[in-house]
Image (cartoon, rainbow, N blue to C red; front, side):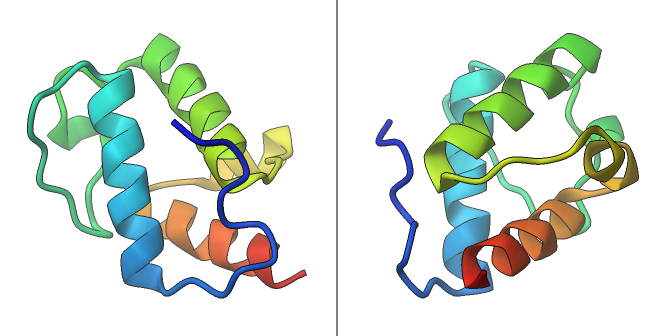
Length: 91
C-alpha cells in the first residue's frame, strides 16, 4: 500500500471509508469485507487487540496521520476513525 497518499489532498468521507476498508482487509487477512461507519470490533471476528494496533499503525501510514493514545481509546467505531482522519487531513 502507498503511504501518506492523502496528504494535502481533499478526500471525502466515503473515500476515507473505502481506504480504511482496504486497510482492514489487509490487516485482518480477509478477501472481502463490507463495513459502514457503525462497524465495531464486535462485528469482525478477526478484530482483536493485537490486530487493532496493527490497524491503527497501517491507517496512520496510509493516511499520513498520527493518533495520540487518548484518541485511539476514544475510537468506538469506524465512523469515529473516519471523522478523526478527516479532521487531521484538513490541518
